[in-house]
Structures are given as structure tokens and as C-alpha cells.
Length: 581
Image 1 (tube, rainbow, N blue to C red):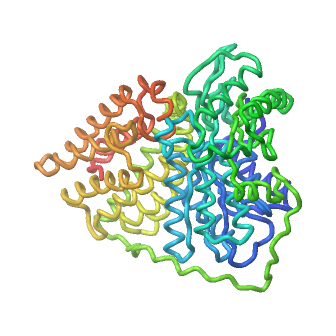
Image 2 (cartoon, one colour):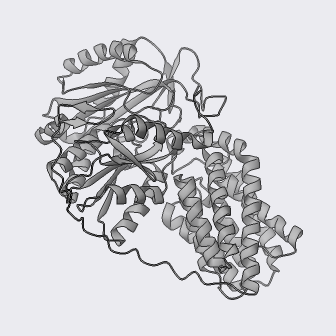
Image 3 (cartoon, helix red, strand yellow):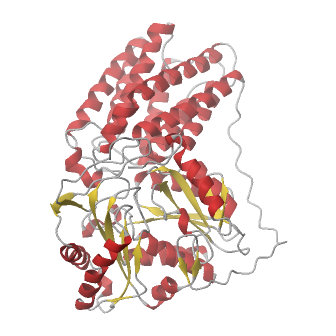
């Protein structure tokens, strides 16, 4: 149970405030996360770790000399938004480019990827790398689909050490790729974790059992087994990792090892387990190199642990052993590179200007006002359904969908209301709403709703009410934006399963002369049916994919929330007499 918090919605913000105050010699807070307390030398690659909070010491606990230059921090178990990532990167970069390092989760890939493209467009070279060490989340011939869990610590450390030595951006990326290819992790859970403000864990494990192949965002294991002795568990973990040994490491017997506690399994228990693990590694001909035993990548108060092996060559061993000084990871005494205090870092190219936010008039003002009404309706239904959406998400995910949608729609509504009071055109109102939704919600849903709202706005005229063809184009544009960014298709068990039938039906009916309100209502009915039908699907993307069987029988939360919003907006026709846009 997570007991110490003020407002659960501000748990991460309050944590960052306290963390920065406690570690002023290492970090300073910036919008979106933290960066090193002292600037680095001009020309150094800025290595940034990132992801949702709830995992301390990952990800902010490893910021400091010899390790990361900064950390992008999202809400609990939620990917930080692209805006947060860009903010931290701009504060940390020193002229050598930026590398974002994170686990392989759809929201992280999406948001850090957006930030990297924006930074590059602004003259700051930026790259991304997603760690894929979790052997339980996909088979050996599909390593690119694996999740990133505690093995990320080894990847982060070696890449950061390479940057500290002066390697360029391409070389630091190569080190991250090389380390990841040689890193494998397997974890188990004895009990679930509880989100701040919740009165029940995201999942439970029956007494005397363990969940094998857990995630670090409150996801249960992919299977269950009997909980035996520490010796029994050591054999399961070591055997599982050795069976997945990377193909090109046959002659190498030196390994970086991380035995990681997930929050409620404490050090004495881990040391009991380590005694058995160390003996089994020795019997397998493997020599641990500076093993790390302790809490390094946690999941709030989850009871469980994971074992990571990373097969080392000479280069990786040097980087793994290199000194570091951070709040949570210290090794030797790193010498900070001298900083030219008066050096002027290369200025980033000016950000490309947004399309002009034209002032609206006449019928366009009414459309912008209807947009605000639609967002209010969305806010009301999402707050009403937040708890139910969270329960749907917790079946095979991290249980944060309801909270994230509420944060997103609240921010979008405030931004839209402000833009409307300035008499901006519908495109500008929707762009402001979309950007605010993405920035505050974070995660996959935040990014997707952000681009969808922007795409709808871009298809609408600035000086008049939209015609039928423009409404059809707006629906199609939203679908295109979402599928282009997220890569999902119908049948993947995502919000696309509700959005695609809605956009297709709405567009087809408009083009056959059906009144707009009637076309919208019938399209909404199809979206609701499609959302319910997702219960029969097995997820093929996102955090739910490794727990696909568990998800069968439960509707997708993203499709469900979309259908609920579309339904709420449909009521505007009866309450305002206006056609929905």
C-alpha cells in the first residue's frame, strides 16, 4: 500500500520537489524532470533516462557525473509527454546532441520519438533507444517486441560512461545497442503494487504462488508457478536466462549482474537469493563483475525481484566499471570534465513557427464554441468513468488509463477555453487543446489524443462553419494521424478499433447526403459496438500484449473511453441544437 501522499494527482510533482531538495549536490529540477546540478562540458552528448515515476531509483536516481545527464519523469507508470522530454533535453544538452534511453513501451517510444524529431528540427541532434531485456515478454526470435525492465540499468550505465569519456552521439547509441543485445532479464512477483490513492493493488498473487515474467508498471506475471525456497527461485531465474543467452557470447564468461528488488522484497531476502544465484552462475562458468544487489528498478510497493545478466566484452566491462556519482548509484570517484563557465553553447535553430493562429469570426466562432462544449462533455464523462476505465486497464496493464484521460481532458479544456476567449479559429482552439492534452496526460493515449485533435482542427476552415466534405476530411485526418503515430491497425485491440469504424461510417454517411447529426449518431453507435467487441480480441501492441490471454474477455480501455467521449459529444445536438463537429 502506498500511504504517504498529498493529492494523488500530484504525487509525481511532489516527489520531484522532495527529491531535488534532498539531492541538491547532484540534481536540479527543471520542467519535466531533473538535470545535473552542474553543467557538463561543451560538446558532451547528453544522455537522458526517462519513463514514468514509481520506479525509483530508476530513472532520476542515476543522474550525476559518470551516469545520466538528466531524467524525464512522467506520472506514476505513465510515459512522460513529448513536451516534458523536450524541456529536459533543452536544459541538459551541451552541444553534443541528446540520447533518450527508456524501456520499450508504446507510450515511451511514441513520446520520446516525437521529442527527438522536434529537437532535431530545431538544430539539436537527438536520438532514441528503447531497451528490450525482458525475456518473458516475447520469444527469442522477436526480441524487438520485448519490454525494457531492470536490464535498462546496465544499458544506461555503459552508454552514459561512453558519453562521459567523450564519445560522439552515434558512438554512444552504438554502445547502448551493443549492451542491450547482450542483456537479458527475468522477474517474478509475489504480490502486486498499489497506486497512490487506491485502496487495492493492481493485481494479487495467490498465497504460495508467484507470477513469473512480471512487468514493472503493475502488470502481473505472464504465468504462475509455485513459490518454493530461495534456492528454487534462483534455479528458475538462472536457468531461464541461460536458455536465452545471446548467440554471439559463447566464449565470454564475464557478466554484469543485477539482482533487483521491486519495492517490498528487502535486502536481506535478496542476499539470501544472491547466495544461491552466485553459486549457480559459477557452476555455469560465469563470473559476476561488480554485481549489484538491491532496489534499482522498483514498482512502487510490489513484492518481487528480477535477475539481469549482461554478457561483457572488454569495452563493456570498462564502461560498466567506470566511476559514477549519483543519488542512488555510486562507484569510485568520477572526475567531472572541466566546464568552460563562460563558453557559449551553440544556439539551437529557432523553432519552426506554428501555422498562424487566425482570429475567427462569424460562424467559425460558433464552431470554436461548440468545440469547447464538446470538451466539457468529454470531461464530464471521463471523470464519471475514470475508476471503471482504470479497472479495465488494470486487467492487463498498469491501471492508469482513467487518471490519464482525466488529466488530459482537463488540460485540453482549459487550453481550449483560453483560445476561444481570444476568438481564435477552430483549428487553433483544437491545436491548443491537443497540445495540452498530450503534455499533461503523457502516455500513449495522451500522444494519440493530442495528434487527433490537432488533425481535426487542421481540416476545418478558419473563416466559416465546416461543410460536409470538410467534416468527412476531419474524421479521416484524425484516424490517419493516430494510426501513423501509433502504428496500430484494426484488430490490435486499441482505440483504433473504435475510431476506424466511426470515421469510416461518418464519412460514408456524410457523402451519401445523410444529415450531419444523423450521420454522427449512427457512426457513434458503430464505435460503441466496436469498443464492446474488443473484449474478444487479443492485444497485439502496447503493455497488454505480453498478457494477451488475460486481456481476452475485457474490452480495451482506450476504445471504451473513445466511444464514451463520442457518445457524450453526440448529446450536444439535442442539448444545443448544433451539429457535432
